[in-house]
Length: 532
Image (cartoon, one colour):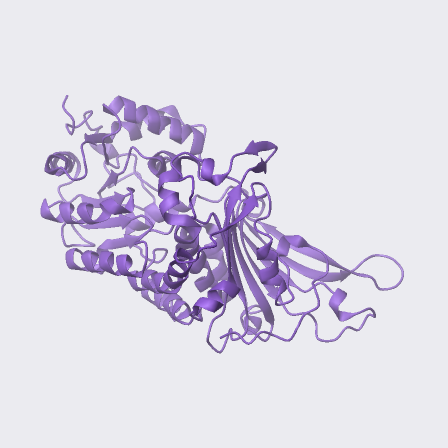
């Protein structure tokens, strides 16, 4: 058997993608570029397995893996099987189900710049179509390093593999993983290439955070509950915190991360998308374009910072040696494939403002970092204190209400309120009204990639980022990155396993606030900041 030849006879027609699926009923093939990489092993194949186990995808979905790391299909399948066993939501794997999925996995071994790779891919797709459905749709998933995106997008068109239809018979769609560009200029150049080759409806720009259940629930929480929207503004909210903290270091991603940094890796995409969902106006509908327009309006209203303001409103750090979860951790500059004199930030904290009526003067604090004390992703909406204290004591000692959305781990929502402690007299203490997804719904929520892969197969853009929204995010962070690149000081060192640079505490304390997990009574509050 030669590379690119179908690896095994297709099972009986009963397993074709037109049946055995409660949602995805159109015949389709999934083509994974970068299929021998970590993303496919840890996320994509486990997501496909769990979707199939839940009856949301057909067992007969043809999967074509394109790569060159493995010498043959058997080696590829062994690695993918190990990934499913370790990372799939539905585990341990059912052997019969895995066999049916594996029978549909084909391996095209070749380089992304080689014409023979695309010719072989075309033969495999043609063969799959004749065996299953001549109008087989094609979903091309670009899980490669970003420098390969242009050649992939152009080669698919040049070899006639991706047609012009986004829906209907023989549709073709392309999922582009992040990062979508490295700054404003490269993002616009990539968007221009995409628009020359594909219709907007064919392109799905991936930001997997948008597929997380708790983040989707943010819109429901805001717009399906009448109690929140009337107080969702600067008159009632003092500040908003968005945190993405990881205990892990860069692990095997040293070469990529040392050219990117935490702002490109996390802030520009995940965090600004979360900020936009928190701050956007109620959309006209849940139509993808209406949602995207709401996010675009928020990102365009971000106050741009002058160089001296960048120094005052941002903090960057790089982890040194320390103790993480009881074990010694090396410094970032000691990680494999990281330059010994690297000035790349592994931690960033930003204080940003929105120049609009709803949020004028309200600081939004964004912080993301690696090798920190605790792994958590959360959004904290900190409300203002009650304007008048009836129960004695001083107003500053009263804990302000906070709404906490836990994105990961332990997905859920918590509302901190004040209540009377039992006993004589009136002693007030904060209590938490807690909602846990797994406990409330008796099952673990699906992984983000499960929802997003299914949506791409269905042609639903609601949880994908639009091109102009991505460009607006780059327009905000690019001046910050350029200023940092010309700064001689470089990032501050912080100990691995700590809470990050001490300057991050100063950043939030300047407005009289504390990070959510610090606890204790808030510091005395100065007059409200004026924003832009």
